[in-house]
Image (tube, rainbow, N blue to C red; front, side, top):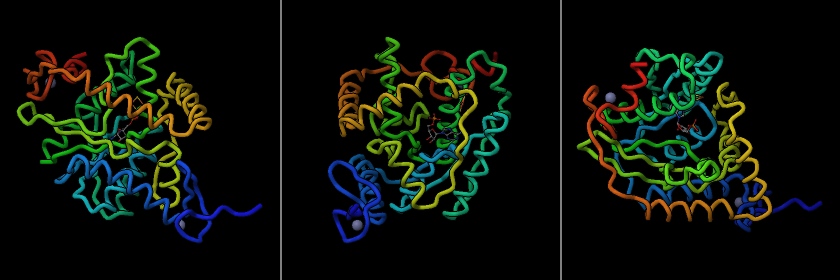
Length: 285
Ligand code: AMP
Ligand code: FES
Ligand code: ZN
Ligand code: ZN
């Protein structure tokens, strides 16, 4: 069998995407180009707090932003999950060493929260992560928070809301969410918005970035795993389906955007929908 050649040079191709073949070097260029398109479109410039989970996506996101020579402050939230959180922290630390940064670590336990005591640990965890990411970025004078959500995650998450009848509940289906200084709300970016799961995996591998393979024990039977598999099958049959769905979601999000009334939490002083923010509520439980 003939080896497949890169569409841009004479080297052997390692990946095909949207009708083009890529060698290692040109795959890196392709990947970075997709990330750069978001950075340029939203004129991202200034300090970025990079949320590292220890997993492949945030490692890929961090490395791409590092290659684009942006000003980065990496941080990790240790959620105190046994046999998981410490392993992920080690990987995030290893990655920071590889790239020459110091990792900032936030411990959920410092806020008196033990996830295992909650009935729905994933939802408590989600609230806590969102809150602590924003607080960290705000306190460290960052203009943005970058997360490693990729194209497959975004479409999967929207689809799971769609399937459960909550299409209007979901937010964040666009690569940039504006901040609001008066509410101590830092802007969010998703640099991997146009990149699929397997592309992020490949980018992490070929650049030999440290990442943890462990999955969160609370997510093992998550319904989203099946939805992602199903979407991957669709993408394999009809390349571009995921990207087109994300484009539709983005358009929908712009139409749905309305002025949500925000407050400052009367307990902690950070952004909140009600009088007291969700994070302060879970701390009281
Ligand atoms: P997840 O919600 O686990 O799908 O993660 C989505 C993104 O949130 C990751 O790509 C990271 O950027 C960020 N993130 C998840 N967990 C953590 C964590 N423990 N510490 C910091 N950032 C995180
Ligand atoms: Fe939050 Fe699993 S990472 S519950
Ligand atoms: Zn090439
Ligand atoms: Zn609060």
